[in-house]
Length: 121
Image 1 (cartoon, one colour):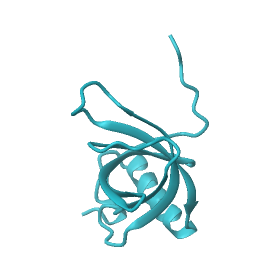
Image 2 (cartoon, rainbow, N blue to C red):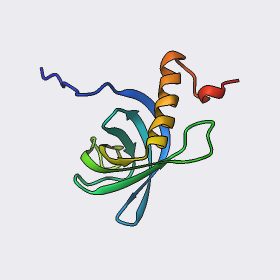
Image 3 (cartoon, rainbow, N blue to C red):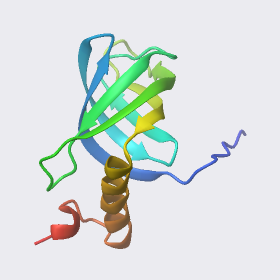
């Protein structure tokens, strides 16, 4: 049995995202977030090593967060119509966008089940 040792803690999230790779837009979902990067899932595949810009919107916030990075790993599970998974390692994230993401994640961590962000009704 192999055990994966991760360098940084990961926080599970599920957020719609648009990935731009080589001028092509791909609809994906961000499914986890760590200090170094994000995990993504979707129907369209990514290629290891390609540069990616990810635009996502934090629930309850209408200003998109923009993350730039490189595909660290990517795979398709099972059949051709199965979801593709990948990991994006950050290369550039503004301090403001990083702070907004961390605030959202922290709020979800201390208030499990909350998807409305800090302004929860």
